[in-house]
Length: 107
Image 1 (cartoon, rainbow, N blue to C red):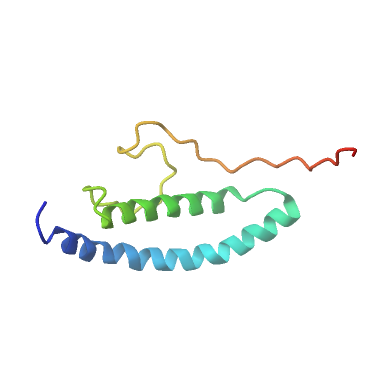
Image 2 (cartoon, rainbow, N blue to C red):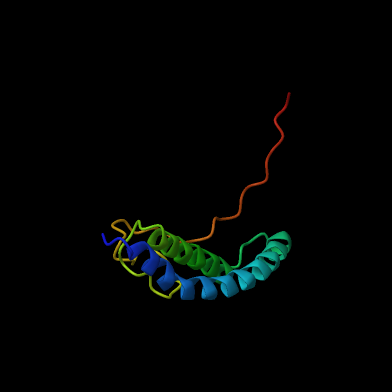
């Protein structure tokens, strides 16, 4: 590894950080919307879930590249997981189902 490679990688990650900042601002608003949707319907909206999960995967790819854990430049994309060439096992992406209400046990 070159002596200055870490600096070049940090400079190459700046465009990702700018785009991710604005996406995280949008996701923070959508998280509040999803919270109210869960409150009234009991289900997490699939589109918001896909956006949040794709953004998390993108952030982890960028952070792994910036921390010199990976050499491949991360793509500018929100993905659904399982199709990334770096993954060997497909990861199922889906929101958790509705949880049953807790029952009180007799004491």
